[in-house]
Image (cartoon, rainbow, N blue to C red; front, top):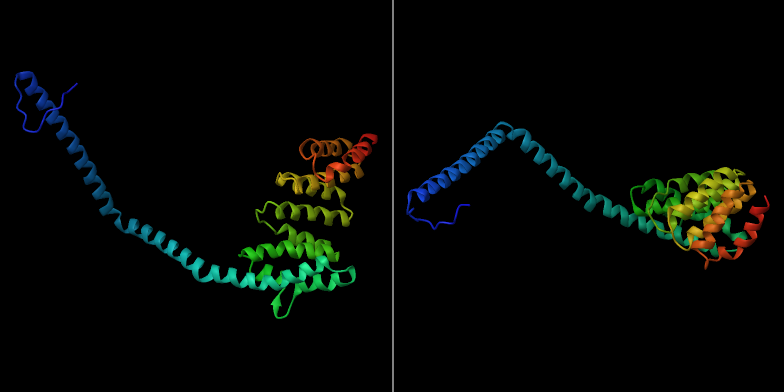
Length: 255
């Protein structure tokens, strides 16, 4: 192994002199290689500078355009959509708490709008690229479900694609409710199972496992019903749904 030599060091013998020559030769070779690579790089850049600069400019334009879109279009749209959403949300909340006689008119106002503000339907279509527009799909679907407009409910709920821990499975499960009302229990069962498996939490998971189990019992699919009910017992013994598991297990086992 070559030993370290201070700059200006003079070899003391023939062996050290040969070693110094070898080191200098190796160093020169390394620098020559680097020079050669640098020359090739410069030649490449010189030859393709227009396309290279074109790509750089295109990337810069895309980045600037995206930032401008976010600042001057997306952000104002988000604010505007949220303002429109506020009135529709108030109608919806009042409808949930209202008497049956008042509910229909309030749900319709939440869908169609009032007081010079859009309803969920217009917010969904006019602000589809905003968070409020996405959320409007969910509320429009639930409003239609409460009004008995089951096909419309399915369409809006199916368009709701947010990644929310609670609302996402609720939307999927509500589609199952709509299919049950349309007397299509097989389709409903599929959506209840999807809703139960989309997230794993103590609210939506046992809720839709039980709905899936009851639907499976009505379809005389005992094995599937027992599977869902057993999961409630094992994973969510403290849930409200767990209180009714024994009754439905008995029904499933009697099939």
